[in-house]
Image 1 (tube, rainbow, N blue to C red):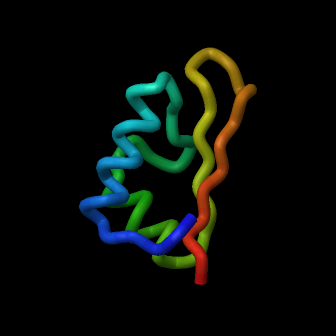
Image 2: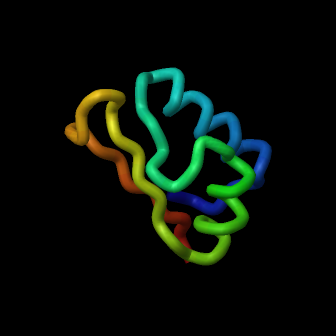
Length: 61
């Protein structure tokens, strides 16, 4: 995923949650952005009540 501001990421994060996905790392977009994505770690989302389909996101270097 292209680098983006925290504000833009929060919008994307919330849109993913609205589609019925849950973030494995945290439900807080600030934690996901600062503690994972900015540290070049990927984050994973799964559909509620099922681990398939799954989404993995990592920011480009």
